[in-house]
Image 1 (cartoon, rainbow, N blue to C red):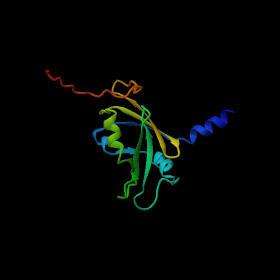
Image 2 (spheres, rainbow, N blue to C red):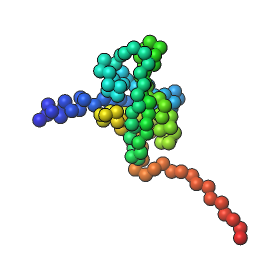
Image 3 (cartoon, one colour):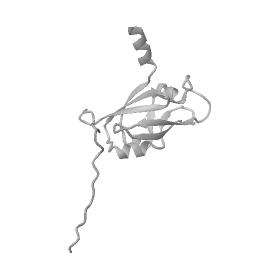
Image 4 (cartoon, rainbow, N blue to C red):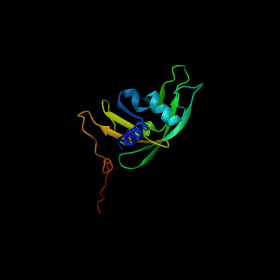
Length: 137
């Protein structure tokens, strides 16, 4: 039924972010997405809240990333510890678009779009430069 499909889709939180230089160490997320990840429903709460989420990389690797809220009164939510490593491993750049989707159970999937708005295809792992040395025998 169409109603059943709409209900299932509404249960998942999705967010589109444009990466700024500050997004490489701590990426701000919406209160709605944080509420899904932290399981607090109302998006608020006293004090700092921290929990881990699992980010599934476009290449299938799983990254543990901290989900938290600032305790300075504005209740800003973020992806923290672990996010910088994810960003570096995928070569994310300033101005890229990131679509983060909560799949349930603290699992996030990520789609990455570069500055040309093209979906980054990480079907193969990002290239790694390997230096070879030759020895003269």
